[in-house]
Length: 255
Image (cartoon, rainbow, N blue to C red; front, side, top):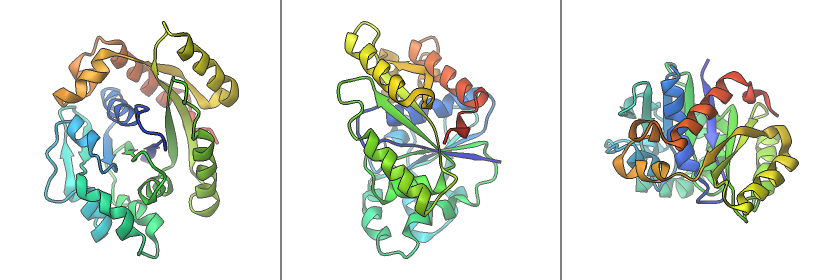
């Protein structure tokens, strides 16, 4: 049975795409078959894996109601495939708004996916129809939160929106966890933000913390996950730890 996980936060710049790419790579290295869905019109997950989009992308899947099998591309990482995105996906928000079951289109086009242990959806930094589609399709949600001053800005609103998705469309959606990103142990503010978030959200926060790391910042420009670019880096080790935590600690059961 495949696990469908959305990586989402309404706030931009929190490491959402970095987490999507590198969590996928870490799960693949752990022996799982993984499909990454780039649902962000900025297509950073696509370019970050050095993928040239095919003539058909996730946009055509959504608009033409076609299963994703025909648009899957392999990546440089064994066990990790991607459904690419490109800029025309930005029009999907408007085009989907005229469809009666607009919130369930992605769920329907993913129904044909059979050969993956995990499907990870990289969402855009907004709570629009694309993110709603991801949350309706997903069984779990991971929320990256940056260890900086405005870390909790919008987080309560996001969780409120998630609850509305549960009530209206997807009662099985679970919050797998909040992952703290861009952590710098040398900065008091990072430690204070971590303490505040852990104090408030308690067991919903993953034990693994993703550090601010040069290799994580450089890897996308080389079209590789950090595990391929610099496997000895602290960023690579952190995402391996996060994957292990997901696989062994039952985070998918958090409500």
